[in-house]
Image 1 (cartoon, rainbow, N blue to C red):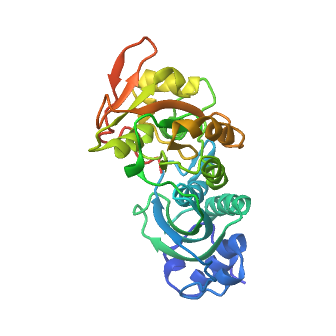
Image 2: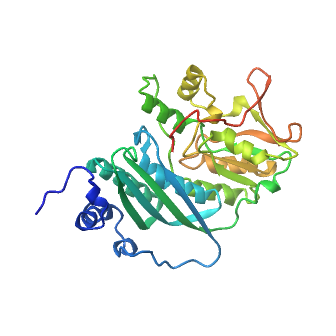
Image 3: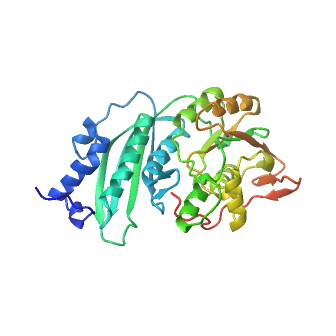
Length: 338
């Protein structure tokens, strides 16, 4: 029997024996289930009655492995969270791997193990997928595309158009962990303190929030562009804006220190296990308690409110009593973070 290569070869993408061997010996053993093992062109699923949510995303993070996660965990959590903030219970996923020639198979296995572990914890399966191999230099190791299907469960966020002055702004945990951890790892920054990505699946946290605050107006996972991007999306062209209180926004000391050292704003730093929500003021205390009771929400906080005083703007009441306009993210402060 021929020895299995240690690295990905172009022949692994050729559709022949080596391609089948890669799927059988490396990929399928981590995601094995009846739908996927059939290796058909599509998975046939029993769809629940009611509405479905469908999302897709691609992941090109650099480096592939970072404190708190890796590209595989990121791909699974990112897709789960996109469904979760839409009010859907994730059901199944697809996964496409674009692998560069020469990529170490042991590193591919590490990524697949990480994905499998996260899927098992979330109770979700990958039921279909694809693998392509590209020439050296074309993919910086590996790119991953995932798509997810979820069953929409009431209540769901009613939408940005229902936001009202006086509503409360909630975040489910400290901001900026993912963006700063990836950047510090990529740049080889020796920084005192434990910088780790917050990468985590948030579907059960989102459901706990929605069940407790059924009139939740708006919910997003604050990924690229961070909390600032989410809030600017929320209030764009509106007759109201967002007023934040700097003293209430949870930021880990090591994240704040690194951002200050590099002249960056934690509000612009990406998160992969933190969501932002707008809830009616009378439901905000219960919503906060429900999120704080969740394992991924212990650092949650109410950080501001919707105000007609600052239409279409995001403003920050600073710790010294001043007021600062929070700019929308421009360019790439934190490149290749997802």
